[in-house]
Image (cartoon, rainbow, N blue to C red; front, side):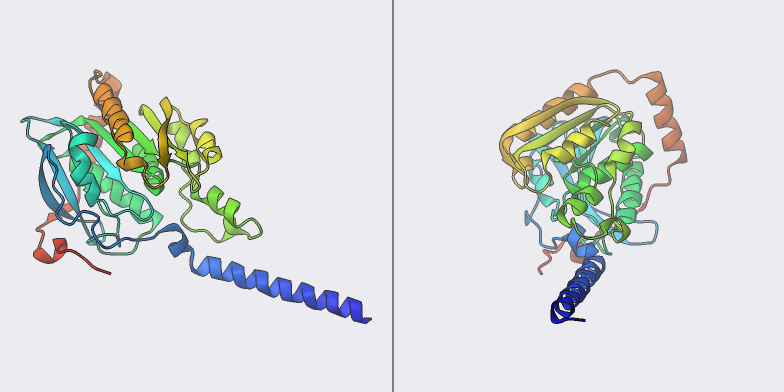
Amino acid sequence: MDMSKKMAAGITGFASMLWLGLTAAVAANQRRLVFNPTLEREVKSPRSSGHRTRPVVLRANDGTRLSGWLMTPTIPGPRPAVLYFGGRSEEVSWVVRDAGKLFPNMTVLAMNYRGYGESQGVPAEIHMIEDGCLLYDWLATRGQVDPHRIAVVGRSLGSGVAVQVAKERPAHSVVLITPYDSILAIAKRRFRVMPIEYMLQHRFESIKYAPSLKAPTYVLRAASDDVVPHTHTDLLVAKLGQLVADDVVPDSDHMNIPYLEATQDLIAGFLTRQFSQPVTPAAAAAVADAVANAEPPAEAVPTPADFDLVTK
């Protein structure tokens, strides 16, 4: 073999080893690529100006403690409710602070994923969906909640949780903030030369479940989004079974969109209008069946350690 062929073979071998090394690194670190748990509270002492606020600690099926907040309106009687799912790096105490504006006259449950905030455990797609369904069931059994009017709201990564929970439970309405077709598709776009489809465990393939959603769905996009390009949202929107509206929030980006007054006004307006609609007999029957078969999680008594400020 002449020198040029030896050099070509050496370069090819080095490139192959580098590719295999990068592939192995992506496979080994995929959890950190998908999830970025935030431990410290965004709001140190969260309280809603429009609700009664109390900390909640619930136990998942495997006993993992999940921590968050329940906000109930000051108006007595069963009220419409919202179950909120946060983003990849999001700790949800800010939802408590903004709940009066975002979800007026609605009961709100905002819980941190496993490994986020004061919740125990390690995040994983399968746990997020299982826990999300349990949280829905728990919310539906609260005396201050109208079980026929429970909306699910998901931001970014949480949009994938919201879609799957809405598929499994009779959600009244769905709000998706900067949603995507699938995390797998976004990962393939980022790691073009790697066989990512064989490595990625947490795929959040919302596009697979979108056609089966029966609840009216509202999509909100950021005007500038370099995390979830609009092309990925376009693919999801095209498959949604009950799309009501698809709006772009002016002057927003992927990070600031939920905090903007314009966003919060749009969400509050959509949910208020949806909750004012009469419940169909078919929807009422679906809710009755779901409530009858639900096994909501056990509620644990919060201890000071559960809601002390956690620091990194």
